[in-house]
Amino acid sequence: MKAWVIRKISDMKKERSPLEPLDMPVPVPEEDEVLVRVSVCGVCHTEIDEIEGRTPPPVFPIIPGHQIVGRVEEGGPKAQRFKPGDRVGIAWIHSACGKCKFCLDGRENLCADFKATGRDTHGGYAEYTVVPENYAYPIPKIFSDAEAAPLLCAGAIGYRSLRLTGMKDGDNVGLTGFGASGHLVMKMLRFKYPKSKVFVFSRTEQERDFATELGALWTGDTAEEPPERLRGIIDTTPAWRPVVEALKNLERGGRLVINAIRKEDADKTELLDLDYSRDLWMEREIRSVANITRRDVSEFLDLASEIPIKPEIREFPMEDANRVLLEIKERKIRGAKVLKVVGR
Ligand SMILES: [Zn+2]
Ligand SMILES: [Zn+2]
Image (cartoon, rainbow, N blue to C red):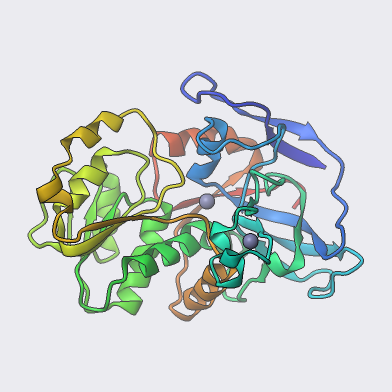
């Protein structure tokens, strides 16, 4: 099969084409795994974190991609949940041990044996992939393949981030950065928390205009101060400056949720501007979002079909993967980017 792989850690400022095409054997589903013929795969900033070594794959070459929609081709000897032709999605959680205390109390995202699709196992930038059947999700009918792809990561992790803010309807909420996840969180906010005011911080005018279109009450640069204090802020940027700036805008007891797998080191010294009494005192909190659970993905897919959330998507042929990654790296983002995998 045709696949696109990461061969080594590289700096995308110098290496403009970090993904290489490679001919690989079609994987064989073992035990309870299913073989999925990939239709589309969403593109995520995490791919860049893998390429640049902030969350490095343990072995190379690796096929990235963890927002996969495709059709079940066949099952391993113990697989019985799906039949050939069933449409399924695969998300960042490829598997977890199922036995540790984290797995047993619903925090499988924190399992020490957590395996990530497209980092620890081959992902969806290929014609075929395999996954344990209980880590695949039926896709609600209202979504096309391409619409469903960004729901599996940007949407599901946005849903988890929103839960982690601990907000209630009517609480002021902020979004810092307004890319693939931000615009989906906005749609959830309008539906689940209709009385809440949404404030969006972004460095690009394009993202701010997009946020206004989708119902933000106020938008501004990350350095600007909104007219009201916020109960929760979700930060989806790769930088540190927005963290320092967001803390200033929290109300007492407010919480900043950082939804980023890694922060880039370029502006780490900005943290020296943190002022304990202004930014953290009065029980302000910072919480990160790690990975995703199957519950997040399933609940979010249901919610997304109920609202419904049809993500703003842009589709590209698989051959454009390197260019699309660069666009995300340079933050030329509007909506979610989805690759159409070859052979469809
Ligand atoms: Zn992702
Ligand atoms: Zn576990």
